[in-house]
Length: 144
Image 1 (cartoon, rainbow, N blue to C red):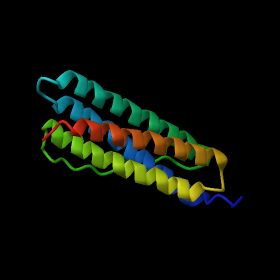
Image 2 (spheres, one colour; image 1 turned 90 degrees about the horizontal axis):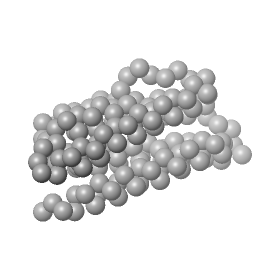
Image 3 (cartoon, rainbow, N blue to C red; image 1 turned 45 degrees about the horizontal axis):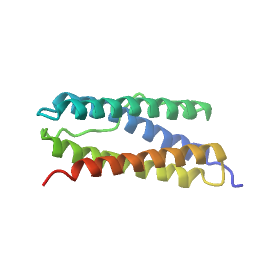
Image 4 (tube, one colour; image 1 turned 60 degrees about the horizontal axis):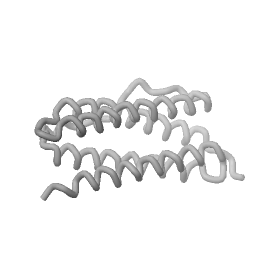
């Protein structure tokens, strides 16, 4: 096994934590902006995404502090598009989920062959983010 690059791992975990916390804000905002006849199930979906982002941020923070890192108090930058049609919100969500997937893949690459636990954590998160990507793509299919 190779030695874990703790400094790089902590940096990545902080970036991921900031991104997941931004997801809480993003998905909460989306849940408030949805209108129309299909509002309730879409709002429930976004509320669930916000809750899951908070759980992910907390999990990452626990690992980060376990490595003797200091969790950031920041959230990742977010832009407001002022486009609140369901399709626009779903497309923004898909972009967010793709970025999350990339970050967890970076984490996997960094910890691979250095920590079984961190590898498994990263793989689990990658699987979760891949499922989010699939779900959102399926939701986007009904739009023409």
